[in-house]
Length: 314
Image 1 (cartoon, helix red, strand yellow):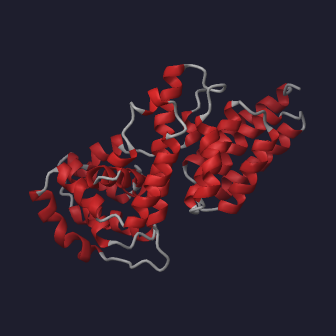
Image 2: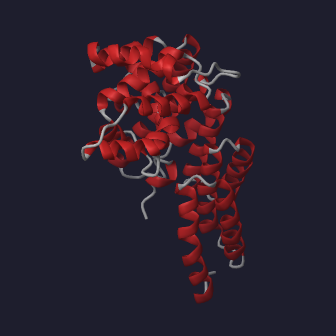
């Protein structure tokens, strides 16, 4: 049943409020607005559109570590929508990410398999290959980041981190920095990364798989370092690239002539990785050195994390 004009106008007001809460990662506000949207759409039994909003709120739940809420909800979406639809594919991918984040790799595997057997959903071969490559990279980054988290991880002060950074930036190439980062990745993380990556790629046809980097190549220090560095964007990006952040404002002032103390950037990265329970000093030092080597403007342009629901075309 279609929405009437009153309902359409109500949804037209609620949608931008909801999207803004999602963008700001304000789970409390997003959930309040979502409940209003849900009540509105249930009046017309519009389950398809409601499922889309559900996927959005559950993706946000993952980002604020409300894993049980997200897991229950995504399981529900998969039951409510038709198999071989984009909504089902999105819910399945998000549920796989949920399990990777809580390190339930065996739970994630059948979902990863479903996601990559998507020829009935993404019918264009070129688009399907791009999606498969990007979603495998996403799975890799998720297991890399969340397997690095430690309970009671050591917290580092900016003074401890900045001592070595100047030397690294001045003496090491970008390739060497990524290699150093990869060398500092614990064996457990590398093993999990290999397990997830190889399982995912083995779901693809040989002709498609051979075009991708092999899992063995991914284990080399430089490549593992690149994967881990990419994964860190979900932790540090907002702290240094959000236009409202103090670091970003100061960097922009520096561009127009003011003095920028690189210590503020190092401090923001250190704090973000501390808050993410990354307790390995070498990872923090090297990651900060790579960001500085790139420059904040380049980093912010190329490393913005994208939500799965953002890839949906309007």
